[in-house]
Length: 290
Image (cartoon, rainbow, N blue to C red; front, side, top):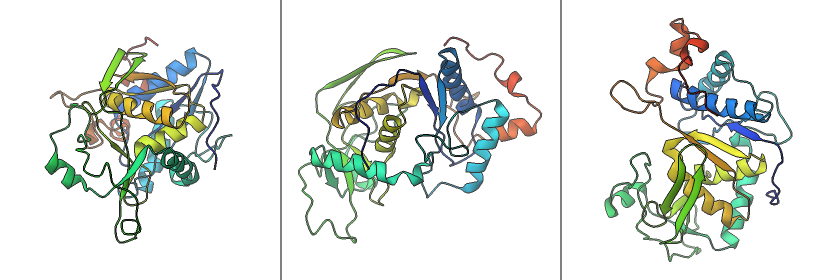
């Protein structure tokens, strides 16, 4: 499966990319609504992608609820897992050929290396995550010089593929909402996993491959993914693909100041609907600037 050539779509294409690992909460809805409104004001399209790669947390009930809750809230999309489209399939679990093509391109360019470290190993060998909203520890470089051999390629010796970041380089981009952003490779983030040891592509690679293939022109998502954007810009560069624009939204927090997560069942769209709330009332005081 070939990745797309570097062609920039002339029409605005945004996307909603939820994962079916829990019920969608009000924070998801606010970010997604911003994405939809930005597409509408630009007379563009919204694409729905089901990010269902994490089989350890994915449940069919959440996938069904995701579509139902999005429709209830007033979301509309022109392409998606329920209606198809020219860049189908829209379930990530059905798009493995695209991810393998991207991985092979990175391997051929010597951008990645095999890593046998467990998360526990990394946490024991390195400091805590640099960014408050980023949960990936900075990799200490244990396997950086490791080569793929017959011994570590055996099924009994599982390994991940890790991207080698250009230590010391500042990755900068202008965010459509938060302005100029700068992250130092090797300091703010380290070598990161693009293919997990269980044979599943990691979020960073899958996201880049899909957004490129689906011709997404702007990625609207939460501010907790700012550091991920720096990582993904490196992937776009390595894969010789144009990066989309980025727009990161402020995170919604509960009364204690903790950012909303899927464990906040009381603020899930499902619970709010059952309590008699309406979408119009829930988004009454949301920002309208687009």
